[in-house]
Image (cartoon, rainbow, N blue to C red; front, side, top):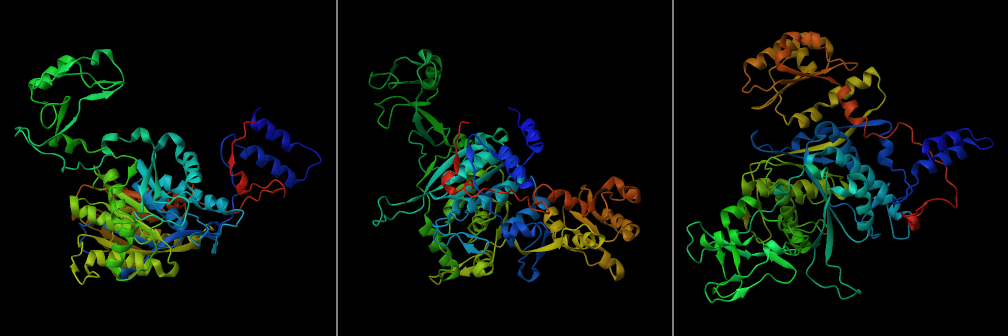
Length: 587
């Protein structure tokens, strides 16, 4: 049965009201054979976007600046749906790693929907959480680069639902793993089974672009030694047998030290043919245990192992727990201001796994909480000389953004004295900027377009990663043209198209002093899509033009809700409740 034919017939039905017709069409459009079905609950912060466009305003007095060569990290205070929408203009397709630790929806005052805690008795508890996550994850996917990866911490309350939701958004084929992290060591004796783990779902944006060799942990060198003084350096002995049964790889190997005969273990074979084995033996690549009396093993040298990296396993029981995270945060802030912060060890594992071969990665955490993700990013940069940049997003409920997220990372950069009265040196090679979300009317009047262009200045700085504003202009020009430049980037923002002619001379002077061959970015106000290309003909060969606010409208158009919400009628006895969350009908 063709869906469109059926919808056409419904539209022609007699004797039904418009609401009944809309209900029937919605049933045809949303019916699934397999997957999640939930009642989409309106969210206040999404409703705000029906009338307003988000922008970001910098709180300049909170900026920590330590030199333009250092990475620029960003903290955004505001609802993450608004911040993610704004980031579609600055970072669509540019984020390499996303880590999130969303509310687990335990029913114990950990998840608010429309300013109200969702408790266990709420019949739409799971639906509200899924509505909340669905909007944000769909935007997050747009932000990911071609080889981008997202990590999501979750527990049993929503793990099954999140897995199905992500299979729908990111596609099941892009699932990398559902890692189990041992989040606590102590045993809880007041329950049937002590819950000692969380999950970390890992999805690629497109796994076909992801190289397995770039998704590796640094090699641990502790097990490598050189007991036989091999001139090729330290080594570790790996098993010489391999999975599967292959006749050409199944043969007897004689231990030359004691004459014992060895065959592959049951159900396995040797990893090479006999001729290749004999070459390894002659090259001193085969050992027979520490005393030379057991089955064959193959030497793997440290330099090769370091280049290749180590494959992660799916159970992480060898890293820090939530208890460590609490101690680390208290050590910095001096008191317990946040419940169950993630430990540095968890984020260190995630960042090393995903950015070990990309030391300039863009990292995003839009449930920033205590700010562990930025702390871990700065620590890893200090460890391996990287230049990764991190964006944090959190609301300021109970002053968490100012007093925890910001204050923690401010102290990490500037240095602090810990709870043992020991001075801890700061990670000074970092810049840190604080932004708040703001709004402009979505109505496309000339007044609103001009206001959006002016308020977009901070968005442009974030987009171009260029924040140093020139003070060389004066008078009227100063209010209508802005210049930003550093060693790598030059940017001109023209807030009024009447000042295009004045900007030409400014652009020429910038070109004369330019230290690179990069095009000068020129953002010019235009009431339409045209960036006045002909007016810039004299400098066209070394500028890149962009019309504002049209570029912002275009970036937002795929993520903003419709200006009017679609109201779908429901029947009282046919509403989707959380009891029917998993629809697996074969009809």
